[in-house]
Length: 361
Image (cartoon, rainbow, N blue to C red; front, top):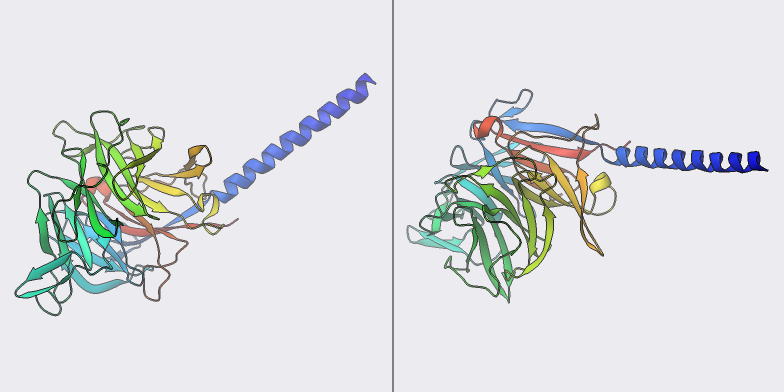
């Protein structure tokens, strides 16, 4: 009788161990991704060459447009389809552009040379300016972004666009002053119900990246250097919080852990086409180039680990900045189930545009 009991217990143990092993293999199989380097300034072998792509930072696209990359190192914005094909248009964006957004509204009008029109793409810069581009201002074929506003002493590292109470706003992360500046449809400073304040963020950390995803404003925080001008990289140096478009605090998404000077933000599509991290908030970490996944549950936000390559090691993209999924349009920004990225490798002295796709087992 004792031997039979031991056999039963042993068998159950083996079944449990096998189930755990199979489950682990299944999880690993669902967390395998492939990086495709598409365009660089000739720094990365095997890519298309674009000398304007230096420290590619902000990454944005409209519903049918290609990707617009804000090149911090060349004061330009360059355009790429999802396969890396460059468009001929190159827009000048002065003052070291960082964040970029698409504007599909009739607001945020820029004027020059007697002409005016809504800026279709808007950029924030490290010199505290917000600039907008319209193809017909001041004349048809314009290739210059025009200044909409300027804030003395500000160092804008990121930009988002959204609406609250029926009005449209821009949200810029002023890293130097550790705040989020808000501008109304006319580029004037605006005051909302909330001030984008997460009271649990320690002193010395400042808003860094920012995105409007599904009507929620997500803000990343990085540690400031001694001059409060640039981020300090390091394991655990980062936070992510969620706010309403009116600036009211909603929730802390992630604290320290695998965060490392986080900046990029994207929401993966649901279903299974993006593997383990389908339907997750993805956070790109500039500090180590890794991407973390976060899931909203009934009990709050849950950290789900790092995206890994086919070698089961964490993916790391040197100088990782903007991330986003394609819009699926013909000649647009690419596959809606593929994650695209912009980066400034080699200490921001070069540039890279590429994609990350799920590698199904």
